[in-house]
Length: 605
Image: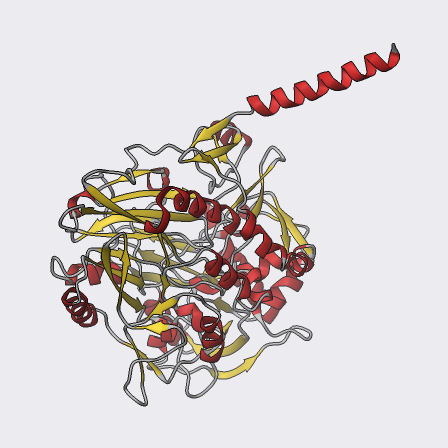
């Protein structure tokens, strides 16, 4: 009798478990608008999945919620599932393009020497790719080795060898080409930002990155003569749209050219380029480089880009008349951005959110599994196998605990922020100087709520630049920041200074003073001050010039009494920051950024 009762209990528990699983709520990622039908009788749709600026981030990032729960954003295993679902639905008509900055940045790219990323792209059968500026960070020979591992072609149309004057020939590299899919001929042109020589972590004296307009016009004409039905530019060139990164911008939906959206920033490369091109030269621009989600029409040309680290992807549907193969430009559709994460917040259907408080968490709703086009989003098995090969190496870094934060500490180039202040404060502290300044791109990722580990810092500061100390007169400092704070790279993080800057209509430095966190004092023009930075901003080699907007400074200034700084055995920004954080119990955002004690006051004039 006892045994009978025991088995009844066990059977009941099994039934309850099954019922619980069956009743577990799963939400559908349904867009506003109709998804195109592969079997449309009148239109041949060519779906394109586009990614950019993944920066070596293979594994999802764990985030601690205010309630104590956890969730994960990013993760190429989840991106792989989206692509698998689309491939099952569309077959050989589906194309996957990546537009550069693939392997540099994340600890995963670092520990695998890029191999983990190439394994991913090869497994998912990328159609074509282009190189980004950070593909050059480890040197040209490393890039050639990386490209040689690919099972796909790279399109590079605007890079010449300065000695021979000829266009470069890298492994698996082509100039503009035609991809034929579903009976449609797509002309593909590839361009890489002209900013590359001063936005990469290595000198490139033998390469020239040419302006785009003439090249695109010439290659477009050639491809059309070869029978191309549409022209697509793959460009590691980008822009910012919807100046405030809000939910409307990240809302998953179907968009067409009549979808109401905010304007894009007129000073960005892609915006300027698209306004230079005459109607009909190109039909679609797949961009990158600026780490911004866009799904816009600029000068009547559709353009999509994504944020960094594989948090989003987008789908473009190119419609062609089934009889004539003519592109139906007015019917081009965007689907996305696709949220790449393990679960979605029920009320927001987003995953990349800065959940500040438990009230926010309640408002966003519970985290639930979700379906895309009727299929459950989960880890794609073949991509998980790739990640498993490098998981032990990754864990060596990720288990090296440094400190913890219960705040979401964001980085941005658009205003003063806690991470910029933390980074420059630490540099000024370890070097004992008057002023610290770095480029906004010196650090790449936010600090999510939870543990900060060695792996976190390798992704946060992937460059590990050398620390340099030097001297400058007061008048030189004023001139430097007049040039820096009106530059194209965003506002430059500082420690030891307080300034007032105008953001619109054009950026301009209005005032600048020394600031120790308590009081301001005037900068004396003829007094010599000591500064600290990294050797990307202020390289000490005689034949090198500064990166980003520092190149303008190098036209009239060279660091004086310059020297490299060592803290113990370490000289790099990354290694010294790792050791610095070991002595901090907890990082708090308000310690480094307080609206009442801003070191960078931004006004509108």
